[in-house]
Length: 201
Length: 343
Image (cartoon, rainbow over all chains, first blue to last red; front, side, top):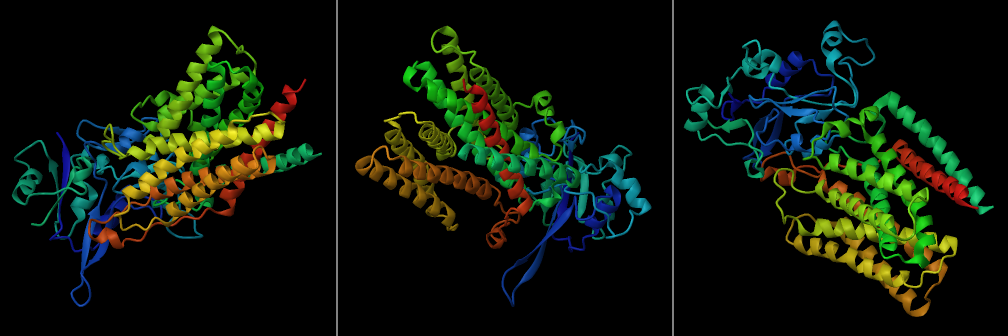
């Protein structure tokens, strides 16, 4: 079993639903986005075009963040997920410096969404697990995966640009799409072997 | 009188360090200018700087002990105080940079030997213990124990100086012979800075070290070679690397000054003090530039990453105060230890 995500860049419209769904599911503090959609302009006026690049944690099979973590707080599961044990994290941020995808975040502070107000009941429940001074990142919604559900960003995508599945199963939709559309991985030349594939379907 | 002024200034700075450290403990690292794009700042620069200086001095002490150079033994004993204080200062700065400083000991139990930080922690701890043993006078000037201590100290000091190279290597598969200038640069800067500090100690304590100017000239050349090599290697790059040119220019200026001192005014304490301070500045600038440069990485795919804004960082007053405070603690420690060492 090896979890992978396939993102169809042709279908992605840059609506940021995935970012919002991720924040709702994980309850990340203000300013922390586990899942960001990088926007950039391709070409020059009058032939300019907006492009979108959704960037969750790549859950690399050869993760540089895992190698540099001195306390073993970053670990890899058998299903390929790269997770963080927050009780072991000392906040040295070596993993952030090592990650070529900038998908890790340091909790400089656990801030509320509404400045000058008390945390909302939602924040009180969700932000309990966030510990200031540690590093956090996307976990492919592992809490949903154990219930047999899909990650929040996959489930919410209105253009169905995302497919989630088992890479070891050649019959899975994810494997099929990667083969069919010659899926590529971001910064593959670094040898990190990301589990997130991009296609142009 | 001068020593009391130094102790007073160091005490004030130490108090500032205590206040700033506890302020940071309560408010977190939000008081710094660091962010998710620029994660390592002045504290880590200071950590690399002080540990490099300590490494250079420890290598000098280990060689003096190994070759049993009795004329330099008193200088080595005084230098050991400074190297220990530098190690303490480096540890304070690293502790200040951690999000959870009280969990720092977990590095020992983490046992991830693929991590440069783990090796760094182990080697620095060994160096600290060996330095303390030497300071306490438990190592005789000659004999088997002296030899074992010297070899161990040499391995540990050279080890962690070279481990500092690993932080800046490729993040996935470094490759056995990748990035040839880093190793030499890290080692040369450490020896250069360490010997400049030893030179200052010798001048302040009145020890006669006739060959030190020549040694500094040799080390300046050694420090310049990897910098010039790296510059030549990056000539085709679109990055202008202006800071790198400034550092090289400073190193060349130091070399010229040292040659002039050697030719026209050998042993002049004022000129030698000035040039030593210049060397210490050059080493700090190099460490600072190395860490800044390493964090400038693009997020977007090519060719768009070419137009991506480079993250900028300028330390806050709080960061400067905490760093200056750790230097104060370091100076206070040196003063106290020298006072206790006096007959």
